[in-house]
Image (cartoon, rainbow, N blue to C red):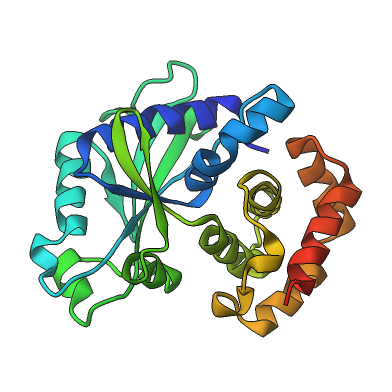
Length: 255
């Protein structure tokens, strides 16, 4: 799925990012899943859980955008850590052989690993593009995370991280899965959904999923996943294809 170089590089810069931003830092996506499930996964499997290739950060947008955590973070990430703006995300190009950041020189495309960082907001204020110069990704469930305090504070790399509760991450992953068109992202989403149910400690039957996911998306989940998708994900998480199918059936029937 992802090459070890890619996840190792992402983890290296994740540590650097966490060490540079103001606490608590809201982590989303694959690395948030990793921090929720890795201890239990490693205890059972004898190896770390799957790393992520990208870094996803979450932000709550207040009224004063110019002084927001997002604004301060962008300044730190670009001016101090050398990430470059690219549409709605930031990127840092890494040489796949030297494993060093590529700076101001021409390098063949096959030697470039573009490590992306997505800056995700709970809402998009009216003049966002005027202030920041780009249109962001928004995740409506982040509003629930921040306003309803549906998060856990954990410490990693000596810093406080804000992780959405497993059921919120599960809903975010489930909402995005039917629309995934890239195979590696579909496989990773399937792995993450399974891992959150199996290893995070949540009790699926006690979660009112309908708070967080539309009925139409819930109905689309199983239909969107092929037998081959389950097979590929099963190999990654070290469980049988049938176990994955049972978990996804439970998710869709948990209402």
